[in-house]
Length: 328
Image (cartoon, rainbow, N blue to C red; front, top):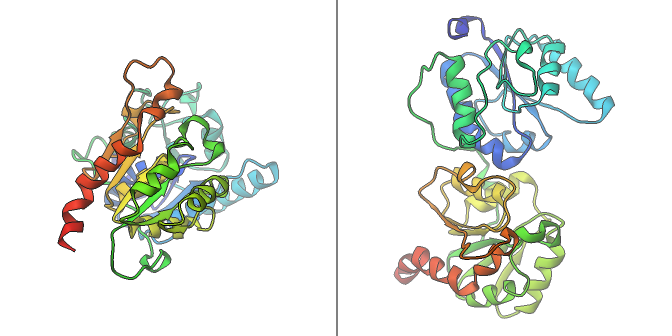
């Protein structure tokens, strides 16, 4: 496919289904933009892509891929009407390849998975042990004839004015501790208020979705002495990104928030308990992160989070923020 660059004027990329994975795909997106600087790049995927990439100069359009049958026809029509020259699949299902072919995409690149190889023009085998960032970048680079050697950094574009604006003063720490919907991935409810008390020297911002809001509101209620702004369930994706980008430090159990911090150059402490993917395959390529996962001799992965005591987290907070705080 490396000799097709002059013909690729319209490129569609089927993005991953989760925010963190989509951020992991931004180095691959940059490779596409560098290889085809004059191409019109369209993203296909979940509705959050509209907000996440609305400020990205590399992206011309976003098409929403909805699972509802009525919306599937609208997605198919959008593909047929735009006459795409090249499609790149960052999802690995047969259905995504079929949709692209039915939508008239001329050439397709994707991993040979679920027996869909007959639909693809470039079809390397999928190695699930490969880091997600490399997985996406290797797919793009391979269909370019391995043109590139170095991996671009994670990067997302955002409107700084969309975030939380606080007057100058104490460092601001964002906390995504999770609600009951996060199950064993949430920070233990017996620890959370104690952690907030230990962080009373800082301004605190609680982050999360609507499902996290009840639990985190209760944590804030139990620590009235702390300077807490609770934004749980109150931000759009754009506001969520811009708020994280304005923090001095993020403490999070949520991988999407972790990847946003990595992509906006914000220091973060990621708390790992039960994981849905191997930790080694999802960690951002960032020098700004501290990753806490203490397994010790525990049998059940669901118990790992209980090892991350507030005091342990505080030590890392001080090592990151104390030098700056002391100067102030």
